[in-house]
Figure 1 (cartoon, rainbow, N blue to C red):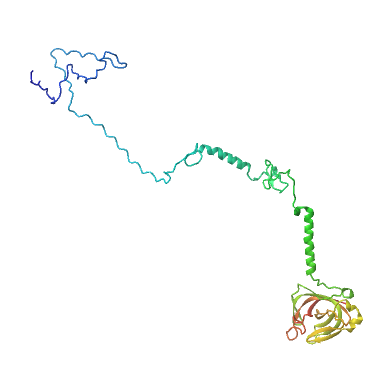
Figure 2: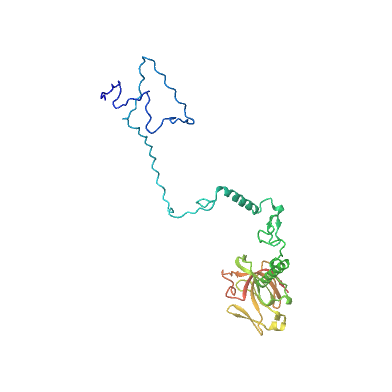
Length: 353
């Protein structure tokens, strides 16, 4: 066996094997070449034509070499994915979640189901909407409460009653009862006025129109100047009786003092002549059996209107009562709050007989 190594071609690296005859490397062991078993593979390319022989004297073909010492190519490393962001803390992560059939985790209906419900609610609201302007001509009035309703309603929107239901009218709405109530109220008002109102008008003088007491009323309150003296009115007064005595006031001659007896007994002349006047602490009082009702009047007449009076005359007088000043600037003696049976009167009208 010849141990000599064949000459190495220029540029040949050590460790390279000589290629097989024909310039092609042998197939790996155990793997037949394509089409080697004699069968035809569907879709396989036709066998390559035999290489033409080189003419004589031409250089041998360049051999193909198989590098056994070259390491296999390393696969490219895949790019590592970016680290995932930490998940948000969910306090209900350990709780079981049950989803409604056809729904979502939030429990809200799918958007497609909202549209029909919204349309239905809007249609119902339109039907039950309150009465709008322009509908009055088509509305019907409820016979029970008077509310106006749309033609499509069969019952009243206020009292929920049907027009065919029996109409029950409250007693205070019955015209007859209303008239009775109004009449009763008017009667009460008239009675109150009669009980609280005092007639201070001027009555005729005479036995037919005698008073049992002085008639006092409101109003008045004016101030009057009488011969340089002031009169301060407090209210109105009217009385009709019979004159028992008449005289001028001592310190104020422009004031006439009249003692007037009242009541139906004054028509009896015998009784009338038996009554006397006494002065008790500036108060003039009437004595007799029986003692009649009486009043002491300090009358202030307007200029030129002072009448001529005498005992036994019938006198009716009306005017303002109050307080008059004397010559000393004080109240006229015998008048004022401490003399309940005495009145100073600024006469507005009088009658005598």
